[in-house]
Length: 137
Image (cartoon, rainbow, N blue to C red):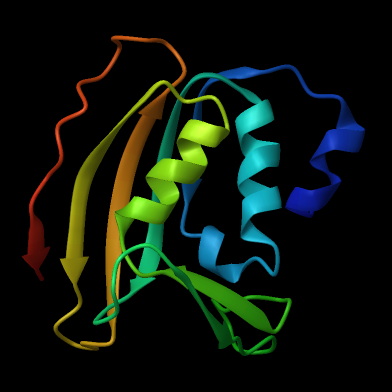
């Protein structure tokens, strides 16, 4: 198992498609982690993360992470976006010309949390910039 932050030292070739699913909120510095994944992405990034629900869109909300429990983070700190706006701006800054919000849903079992998925492309015109509706799950 490798640490995401160690990937640049491995000098890997770029991938056409990168799946960045379920790790953003576990990272103590998620923007750097996303930048590392983006530098390894030639065309498309599929981004999926847990969100903090019930807050204005456009922020990263910090939280404590259990570093021991199975399926939890290892750093003790997490960052949950409050909606898609922040991540779409970050993805544009990272060189993605277009992005599409696939979904942003509230978790009814834990109403303080949600989940969202965004597809982003570095190739202009590859995906439509159509925003999905926010839904409840």
